[in-house]
Image (cartoon, rainbow, N blue to C red):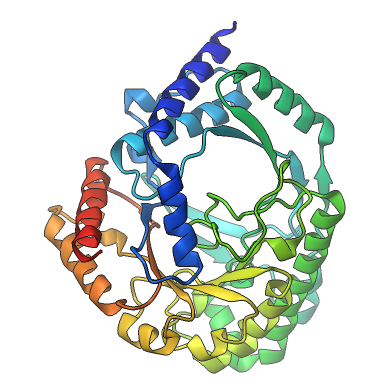
Length: 410
């Protein structure tokens, strides 16, 4: 047995033992119930951990000397660390996912960006590359290739390594992060894009429409290749929690070549936080509907304020969950939603970055959230964590305080 194999097998055994003590069935039911719009104990989890601030921990030190096996090792080590320190209501399955090897050229239009680095946090300044109507045709149809031979090689390799410990499962694409404005502002410039909404509305609509046209062709290419996989499982959907839900078929096995109508879809226009509902509809959402209508269930939103836009979100087919960013007015949102959608609340990550760290800030925030969302299906997802000031134990504290506050009410 090679050194790489021994490292991975030992980690897999350690993770398996931890998972066996987690009562995953109860966790899965919790996420399923909230996604089924049941008013129940809200699940909570920590997502997008600033791992770079924890990487000096010995238990996270990568030891494999093969880049692909290192990626598997990294996932195992991070799973083990999170289970031991801040598991929240996360679901960890005793299996190894082998992603289908897919090469995707995106839309062939790079961006011109200046980056200012500060630790692991980067600031970016974009120089527009789409300036005039003819420039939108610089965006080309994506070239997508499924390398079946390399995928088979990796499946066989992992199958041999983890034999007797856990299953190795093939997984394709469990959805795509569809957000036209995330892509476009990096090609048109933030300031100019906002000005164009007023000064060149036809131009804006033309390049958003072009992006969606190309996205739909890309979706069809994935379908032709048979590489869509169900995300009705412990996959983070949109910017929220897990995809467990009764209204979609259970994932087949092998979970590959699944129609998009059996998947969660997602969309957002987080650059439109301060844009009116009317302009949000005109320049983003009405275009996004062409993508969203292809999915069985949909999640909408990320960092934008959406409490004043529920009326336009009602037009999204099969909408089930709406992001509530730290800037959302939860009182207004609850009254407009009235139990029709899950409120996917994003607690402020500032609470784990403050100096000095104060658990009472977390406790007060959650007491307020629980009062304001009373009677509405709710989940809590701590994400976009830029820093914990080099103190990962702050995440342990967040996890503990949140559990205490949720248990106090439920």
